[in-house]
Image (cartoon, rainbow, N blue to C red; front, top):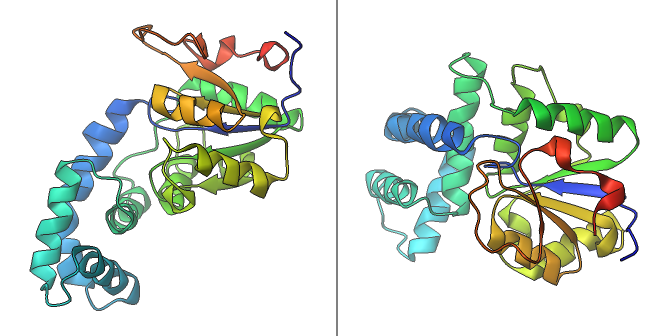
Length: 233
């Protein structure tokens, strides 16, 4: 098969550039433990008020109290729901944590080195994650390797669509102004990779623990060092 010319790379975060444990064992518990107090302290601020109103809209109940909204948000968090107001509020709380030095964003060293190499070669890099764009920028802006946000030309979250729907990737390709086949999508999630491939994207699966079962449709690697753009099919 003739190799494709990769002109842009879109990468997932959890399990791909960053450890799942960092997100699930550090960021999520941090936000949930502080969510109620954060809402109480900031409920009058326009951005938090907008989150609460969005919860009421989703629940189709304009009479929900702030406490009711907090309970719903915490329930969504416990179920790991990919719902915009929850992701937005988590991002606000994480910003406070990052600013206060409570933690740094975890990025695998192999991902950092390869992303820098691709960026230096002129390949455009983008993030597509279920976490909000604001949260994405926080994570890459506060790492042990410094601020990595200059490496990226853009960020996408679920505002463009669900990550397991091919239409989302078609929209990204349109926004980037590139042929889908010339865009490489990196993820650890088969459903996301399937959706990207259905949209015409080139795909590579990050299987860091070498534990995946049937990935016949996707090239599989255990780290970024094994990704050679000239060999992506």
